[in-house]
Structures are given as structure tokens and as C-alpha cells.
Image (cartoon, rainbow over all chains, first blue to last red; front, side):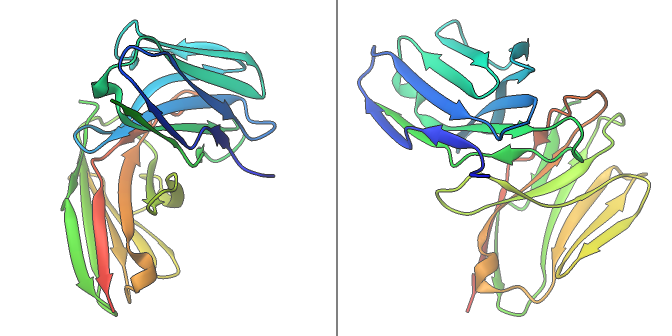
Length: 114
Length: 113
């Protein structure tokens, strides 16, 4: 398996623009997590899905952030409009209920909002 | 109560030395304590994990020590190598099938050759 796939790997955009980050989880995994990593706040859980259904979005910072999982093999995290303080590395991770709790992380998307 | 506190923030060790990273938690409902390793430009990857029914778990040069009464756990890296230079995160989770992870703030380890 190729592991968790994220795209793009790097994104540079201007304040006010819409940004869409993409994730393909490992096939067969039924949980998908979106995290944000910054120097100041470390790794923060933004939202997670179970069987494509959003379960807990309490970590989503504000209404400018939204996430979807239209099917078991694809999820998006959208920021509209983007702001400089959204600059961070965004990770997607997946796991299977039957596994021993291990989450498998993607390589991340480094977002820079100018 | 959901926090996991990690120290030190950074650590420099000579090759062959022992690296020790400590974490403390408050939520007694936590029942799974993994350590993740992250190299620059990569996502975190599970290194080793422990459950509170044991006090120690060893995998190769990596050992987790767990003190349930003190609500503390630590990662020991024996015979540290330059290839171990990375950021290490402790984490904790509890109950339910989701097993959301609460991460510590991370420790940047540098092993000098």
C-alpha cells in the first residue's frame, strides 16, 4: 500500500483565497483525522471521520474551515477565505478500527498564506 | 485535563548516550500511550506504545517506562545514534473506537556524531 497520500505537498496562496487540501487514506481504514501542526500549538486535531461521517469537528478553528469525505478514499479540508495565521503544516491520518490504535500519517501539506 | 505535558522541548545527546524524554498527563481515563517519531518533511510515525497494565515496554533500543500512580511516562533511547535525530511526540488516548490522540508538544532530539 502507498500509505496515506496528501496533495499538494506545498501550497502558497494569498490572503483571502480559497485553499483546498486533499487526502487519500489507506484502503480499508475507517477513520480519517485531519491535524494542523504549528510551532506555537503543536499537533492539533481539527476533525475526524468514521465511515465517511464527520464525528467530531470541535477542533476546527472557525467557520472558514470545512472538511468533507464524499467516499472512503477521499477527503478534503477547505479554508475559505484563507488568512496568514492559517499558515501551518496540515496532516491527514487514517486508522482501522481493528488495528491496535495506530494512526498512519500522510506526509503533510505545508500551507503558506501571504 | 486533556493535556499531555512533554519535556524537554529540545535535547542534544552525544552518539552512544541515553536520550530521555518525559511526559505527564492528568486524565486518568487515558489507557493508551504511544510515542511518535517525526523526521523533517515527514508525517509522524508510531515508534512504540504502552498500556497502563505494564510498567515498561522495550523494543530494540527504545523503552517506555510507565508510572501509573504518578501519571507519567517516558521514552528512553539507548545507544542514541545520529539517525535518531528527529522530533518525538508523546500522546495519549482513551475509550471508544475512535481513539483520538492528544499529543504532547514535542521534543526535538539531536544526536551528535
